[in-house]
Image (tube, rainbow, N blue to C red; front, side):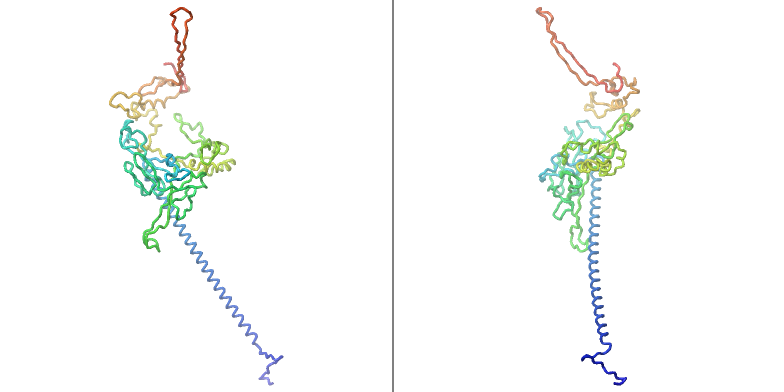
Length: 482
């Protein structure tokens, strides 16, 4: 062995070359790093794929949500348009379907049923007397001729519910018009034969493809199925080429809407009127006194006790005017928190906080006359000698019984001053003044036979008459004798 050529070490038949074990260790570490990187790349790809799928699903959901909102907005615009079209003119009014017993939904839900809470728009069937100059016998009714046609001029125009948007109604037309199987209007009689009725107990708020109507008012808002509201579903069809991926016209959604009448509901946020608010001449109804409403004969209510009651609803609270929703009534008192939610469900279609109306003249059009100005002292139009309505016998002087505007004015202006009626009002009735007189409230006549006191022949039997007349003084002052 020389220094330039070392001799390998041999131990028990195994040769050892310095550095060989370190090389094996480096080769294993590289393999481990490679496998780890591959696993990381696979995990990254799976994560990216999952993220892409989730984002795609979220984008699809957002697109469907946006489309649903656009469909709902379109339904709202259509509903507002129909409301303006059929109830915008002055000679229009509205009424619920349950005003006609033949239209109310029954327990069997047969083909003649109508949702009792649908709102109908009515128009003046014969708008010819815009100046109130016709005689009562010539005022047109729901038929076209004037021969004994007195009565209501209202004619069904449309139901304010989806499915009837394309129905064309002419208030003066006498032809039968039908659309979508929901409406048939045929003067002089109005009938309703829907194509199919919907069972309100099975209607869905989230309808499936096989459903034809959508539930708009259900168990969360009302108590009984008769108070539920369902409306027909109307398809939204997209034209060919307007939607990517659709080469032919196809439905892309559906909508349903229904209009309720807030003006026919009782205001729950009106406090009790005070004595200082009462006008001198007139006292109008300020509120509906809902605390006195009982539950008798109300669907879903079995007791005859007060539906709301003064214990839960204090009509003198000053905080009533702050309410903007009927649901806030449960915050009035501790008792209200437990009793009013159920009561509000029973009266869902009867109570509101935003009941308003327009003082329109549904007969002749325009706004109604303000009687407080027409009947005020010194008013000259109409004249005191003008009749309230045209007498039947205008060609003669026979107008007995037809009141004049002067008589109505004098009645309103008749009031005492410190308990005494002015001398100018102490007059008998005239054609232009109602005059002062007691009111006859009761008349009775008693009879009695009186035998003669003696027994001589020829004495007559007398008949005694006892008349009784009850007069009532309707004024808060003493009436002098005429």
